[in-house]
Length: 397
Image (cartoon, rainbow, N blue to C red; front, side, top):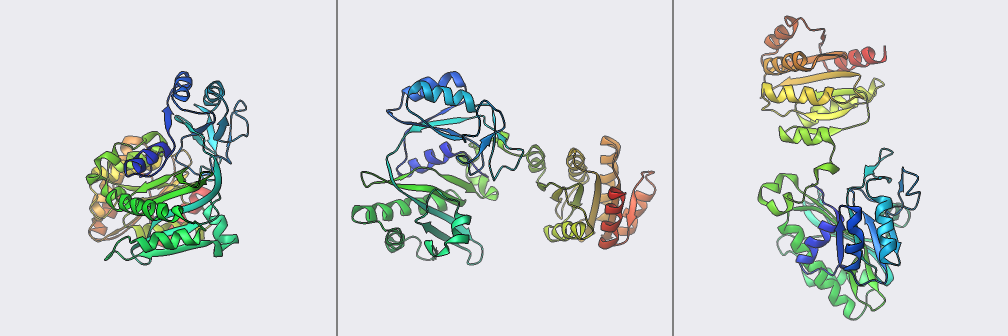
């Protein structure tokens, strides 16, 4: 689960991190009042969407032009004008894709006198199963670009969970970033509180880009991006309350209500599979036969008839879907349950695209019999390769 920048800063501030004073604006008419509550003389007006690259992005609407989603204002009136230009518009960045995201919130904060921009992040290293600390002198840039062009400018190491964060971790980062004097102590303290927040709030990622050194020599968190483990939200009620459902894909949001693992993709063939590994294999073989998957959908091993029905409805709600492949291996999941769910869903929402069903495993004969006697125009497949070939042929003609 992700949250907005202003929410991330508020959370980090509660742990003691140095951040700029700011106000969130939901309605354009509130912008002038919000900016007036800040000191100035420089204000930063930031579009709030769940995507990076906002400053380099552009708005689809001509009124906001190509100036990006992070703008500087030299007066309260200018901050109000920029807010009106951005609020409600569609911002396109390299992370949103060409569709972009609508800006429903604006964050106005005090400007900062910047001397240097740095990069700092904590994330879960799946190789070592530890928290890794990543830092770079190249703040303000995409870390992927830095890694590709100048990897020697990135420091990365993991923290032993037996000891947790120690002061020497902070000093190691500080020295690699060229910090001196009091800045070293500031980094030791800052990294310590960031590590504490990361662990206590069940984060998957904490990225500060940039972390700045101000002209007075002090460190400040200028931008923050936090990601949380969705499986831990049952014990993170305060974080769960920060969820902005308008930033999420409507189909993915609906799937989460039924405990379905669904991710929307850009292809034309909808997939309903049980098991993440089988789902990956199904998507791969669809690509092998010359088509693209429209989604990743794992109904899980304990799916009910109702859950399968909802999964099918979510797939068919995607206008890009030109065909559907149901690929089920019945281990824990019974093939007859899948068959009943598919039939119930088709009867409820209709079937306007080709449907190929491949069943194997527990009660497979019963499942095939149910589909065969349903009267539906369903194409049966004997194995995964056969299923993929048939659905691609049906879609491509």
